[in-house]
Image (cartoon, rainbow, N blue to C red; front, side, top):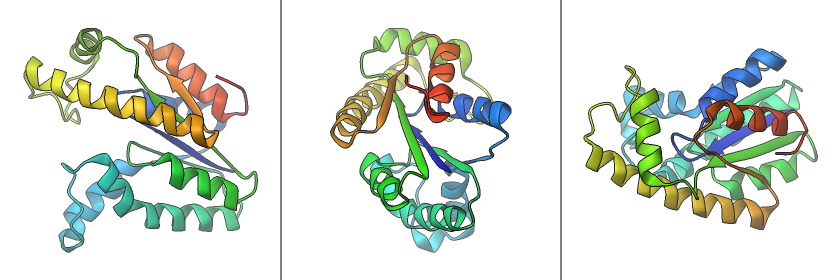
Length: 187
């Protein structure tokens, strides 16, 4: 089975992917690694980590689709995780592999921006945190952008019949819901 875990940045995707691995033993591939591999290893391809997620999704999808198809052909269980997944692409692949793929997207379309800022300040800041040097004004700008992206993702997932989980301030609850959904439960 091929699994897809997409959604807005800061929605709990990586935590959910790690929990899914712990519970199932199914490995995951963070699309940020693919993005950075192209950006650092093949800059001539024009993959810019600072670009909009939609642009990055269009650039990365042909490779992700090819990897997913190869894994499916070999019947290898695997999860792809990243903000660079578009619901329409994932939906088309899920249909193509006829029941051998499952997807869920995470977002925070209804979350108060100030509450999200507090959450980011409380739990962020590690070396791999791309927002660690942003002041609060810049973080709030990013949060507003991610809220808009979450609203779009929620609408697209509803239109395409894909799972969407609205995340809140309780990361553990979000992770549990995402893992349950991927394992075949409902949100």
